[in-house]
Image (tube, rainbow, N blue to C red):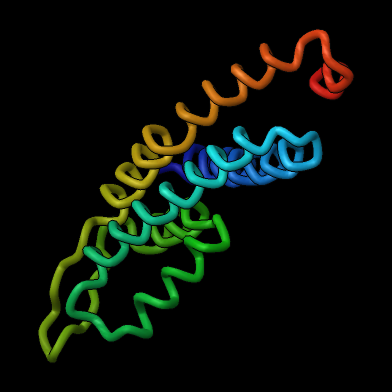
Length: 147
């Protein structure tokens, strides 16, 4: 796995998350409350799906490890964290669980699943929501904000 493929992908995910937060702010500041609620719901749903994946990955491990991973999810930098773990371990991540080594998701598999979750639960829904907002704002005083 090449770091020249992983880091740009993680940076795009982080940029996408930040743009979602910027759109939520924009919707709230332009009184598009319905669009803001949808965006908030989409972002929260995506974070919950990533938390579920992380819970599966850290099952049998102490809660501290899960909370540490959850911290990165809440910050929106889960893709960056996954990329880092992927490049560090190159598919050899193991944890010592109750005296035994238990193999978890391979880091590449976790990274791919995380990216798929982001695409299905966040990127596509927010794309359609933003397109709808763009179309509905035409002819209003906020039309120039998009251009």
